[in-house]
Length: 135
Image 1 (cartoon, rainbow, N blue to C red):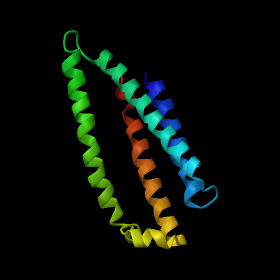
Image 2 (cartoon, rainbow, N blue to C red):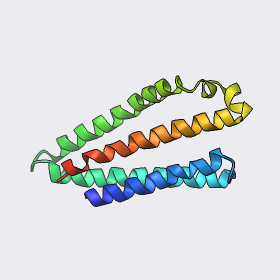
Image 3 (cartoon, helix red, strand yellow):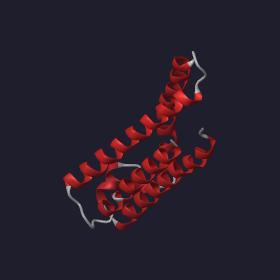
């Protein structure tokens, strides 16, 4: 199970890195953006599926439903919390705080977005530190 989560995380990171091709105007096409976004979401879904399989291994017999509901609740709680943290990260990049700043499309805006995206990737990769805890 840990190998599946590790593989899924590496593929998600690969698709997240493809955004840099869009950010730095190497390859800017609407379909490419949609492809990278949909592919990354698909891999997030596969990672969630792998974590559901892990839940069955972790849960004691007779407590599978409670364990599933607890982990799903925690997973659903993390989404709003991650949005709040993301907005806090935006405070470090003032050029990205307004639509007018983004619309200028200067090198500063591109580099700020790239740094913010890199920070997000690194934070996502730190979740792999918990892999040795899986059964």
